[in-house]
Structure formats: structure tokens, C-alpha cells
Image (cartoon, rainbow, N blue to C red; front, side, top):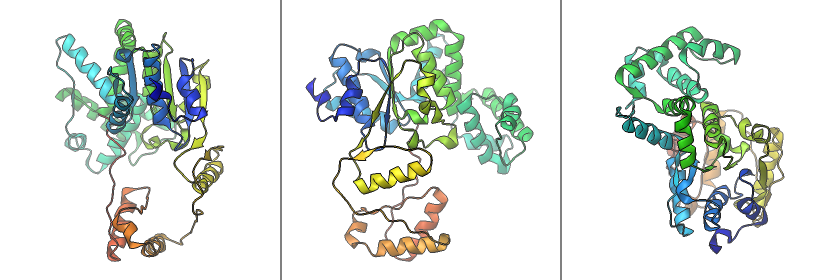
Length: 376
């Protein structure tokens, strides 16, 4: 399959064709993470070094899983691999396991917030949901919450004892209704695999080649799941960039990728250092920001020169909104009509205030405040 190696730069080619079976590809923004991941699958299958039917590619969103499958089809891969999010793959496993043993398949709670309100969380509903996610990412039980929260310096809007009580009531109500939530999918899967070694062996036989996309967003439970899947096999390929971790609020720990050499002895680390997406000016600015944040990088750009990056500081949010409006007003109106101008904000609340300010100036806005993707 010659196309699997077409148009790869030297570092991408090395990442795709390395003979190692235990590999971490550290790839900055725009360096071709998804390209390398899909080409690795296609190349190994074509070389007879991997079986598509025994290949598992794990992503963090359905959208990413769909894009991976589309790229493999364009590469001419005839056999279907298994690809999906951690949650989708593990939920399918739990449901199949239940069916095989004549038990009801696990059902996802229709509305977690409604269930939480029904058990009396009141104004703490959002906080309890947030802490449930934090606990789920680490496999922390309600009984262990107080100790873990205190030793880790965890703070919430409710005292640890009260939060533990609400988390416990939530767990009891889920069991009473016979439902699980998104966090339970991974925790229950991990417990099942650790409790039943024969079943874990069968899963490892089925998924002999494991690939992980966006590995910087792994949380401790997902990391333990990977450990179970690779145990005794060591056919694992991860791609990611610690500087692009976006799920820290939800328990992701980019240190799992930063320290990958210590966590996976003998792993080969391949670095992609050529950004094919951004101009040298943008890349240089990104290097400066990362260096200031204690994450130095030597990434370079392969694109032509572009405008210099400028930074302007406002005294407060009101002045910042006025400044953004002035900058947009100065642009060619055709850029606004064709949605070629973007304003990024850190929170949905900021997007709402920004939209109001731009609406007042008659600047057309189409906001995108969706979550980065869906896990099932």
C-alpha cells in the first residue's frame, strides 16, 4: 500500500515505520498526529505485521473515531478495525458480557442532573456532578472521598463530608434504578477486567494491537485500562502532546504522557517537530508561550511567512470587549460574512458576554459553545 507512506516528512515516516511495538509519538500542534496514527495502522496491516480484525484504536470523541475510519477507507484499508471512544468500546464490552451471561445489559442514566436533583442535591447539583467526574476519572469511591479530597487539597463548594454523603446517595440511587453513568462505564470495565483474568486474556487476544489518539488526555482509570490491555502483549502505540491537554478539569493527567518513559520501560519515543499548519510567526509565538509556561519546545513551521502576531492588553473585561469589537470592525467585511474571523474564549460565560457586545455593534456572530466532543 504505497499510499500509506506518501507525503510523510522524515519524522512522520520514522514514526509510521518504526519496528518497535511499544511506541509513544510526541507530536506538537499541526505536526500530523492523526495522519501518523492512521498511516501506522494501514502500513502495518499492509506489511502483514498486524491484523486489522485484531486492531483497536481508541479516541476521546465520536467525531475523532469517525475521522479515523474515513481516513483508513481513503487509504484503501479493506478490513474493518475496531475504533471508538474509550467509553463506547468499554460499554459495548459490558453489554456483550451481560448478554453472554443472561443478565440485563447496563443502561446509561438518561439525565444525570435530573437524578441528582431528585436525591436532594439542590443548589449543589453542578458541584456534585463535577466531583462525580473527578472521582470517576480516578476510581475514587464515595467512602474514600473525604480522605482523598483532603490529602490532595481538593476544594468544592460543599464540605468534604457533605459532598461524600451526596456522592454516596447518588451511587445508591443509580444501583436502585439499575443504571450507570458515563464514569461508571470505565470504572466497571476496569473492575471486571481486574476481577476476571480469563476474560481479560480473551479481550487481549481480540485486541492484540492497541493505538491511542490524544494520549495527553488520559486519566488514571484509562491509564489502568491500557495497562490491562497491554499486559503480556506490549503492542501499544500512543500519539499525543502534553501541551494540548484539554481535559485537566475532568481528571486527565498529561503527566502520564510526559513520564511515559518511566511508566512504560523500553518504550520508543518519536518526536514530530515540523508544524505544517501554521506560519512561522504563529509557531514562534506558541514556542514563546510554552517556554514561559515551563514547556519548552523546538517545533518549527514548514509554511511561508505570515503577519506578525500581536498582543494587546486591556484594563478590564469591558475594555477588552471594546478592543475586540474595534479589531473586527477594521477587518474586510467579507471575512466576517464568510466566517473567516474567529474569537476564542475560555468559558461559555465569556462567549455569552462577547456575543452580546458584538450584537450591540451589529457584528454578525455564530457562536460554537459545544463540548469538544461526545464520549459515546
